Image (cartoon, rainbow, N blue to C red):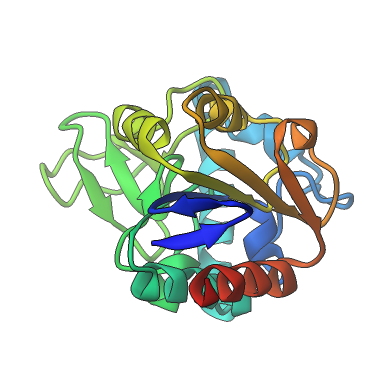
Length: 239
């Protein structure tokens, strides 16, 4: 248990977004120069785009997956791991990111609400399979053998995120909600701060810039994730 901003903290929910991975070199959908092969990534990450041009969607996610080995977890990822390992209470980590940097930093518990880049979902047998290399519409499902049934195991715009029941339970029970590097634009994650507030939690936003929901947080700390996340973790563990 820790003492933070005048109250005792025993249960923490940490939400991470693209901002925690940006310093590792992982591009975000909303980069100013975010076009990919002259396409807006936000127009590619939809069920409609996959139905219209599956080859384009496969190429996009294959390209993103191929970049992962070239990036490494940064100090913010490692600070979250330290919090999970050393905090005397409970720390639940939920991420909007589809990369594996939390795991590579050492996090043993990561709730990927938007799925994982290094996995494929079979539309025939509904199984998710680890997939580190390229695949396309001709690739057979490793689980059931069906060809042409694989899609990226990521939650596209317009789809329901994973693990929402567990996330809701954790938010309702937490004492401290920390949002790191999120835009506040993508729901339902943008609404987590409201749920935490309704349940009496203290809320902290760590972000490089003001988000669309910054005004809802009790505390806002601006700066690079590697600096502000490390500082907050040090503060919590010292308390």
